[in-house]
Image (tube, rainbow, N blue to C red; front, side, top):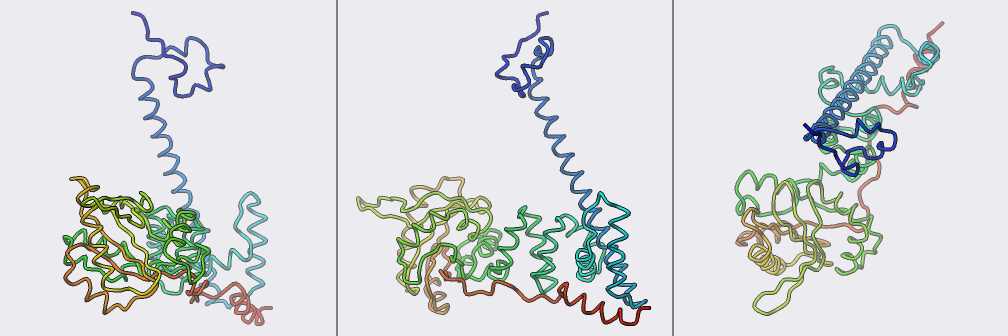
Length: 365
């Protein structure tokens, strides 16, 4: 029986062909698929191993921090002991990083923030130490800290993205837009859609002034589409700007069109440089009807509209949406950052910890 000779171009690792014996270039049918499956298994195993190592390291840090807290409370340990501990651990484990005096202070704060070991093992232990430092130093409320930790795990946020979402108070703004989703969408989708929108939207990264009109804002959004999608939230995919639709021989143009992967629907975004007006909902309602008729497939859910206005009267917006037969949300946008960059934390800073330990250290001999 002759063996099938695979074209070198089709070999999964063709860059190895020059060093491969001719006999090894002869593979049976199905080998490439099997190799691809093995690679997937190996990558998965590597990821699981890395996650296990990270979880063990975080648990170790938590245990060290807990011990420091207990001994500080029971034996009045001061700054000198922490400094000595940092030195001794670095000497004992020169190949390991993370035993600086400052990091030991953070371990202490880490244990104080999460007194329940189960949370460390099941939640924050899935995040790198750098992510946990952001959570510790940026957030005051334990429940809010937990909420951001859960989102970071769910969406795989980098430390920088996590920091951006915390500084712009993402969770505090979610689900705050005025909508009629409860009346116009079925219950499971209406809840998800409502939580998908936020109020206000922060567009300070666009670099345009307060007096910018709709077209200037649109142009800036396209130039910063990655940051805009980040601000919109997970699941949004960009479709187009000034999307043309024809109705009865007349031409119309949608400001921005997106598709939401989880909601499985198109999202029409209309920008208004001024205050919200009731007639805006009529225009957007018309666009939604057109997209549902001309763009949406039978597998897509009803199209959702989002009106982004410079300002809005929430009561007026609620009245305007009551008898609108399409799912629409109304929210404000801010071109210049008005939220504080840094959030107060209930955890002490390194300097505060040092002062506290220093006071206790005055009793040391």
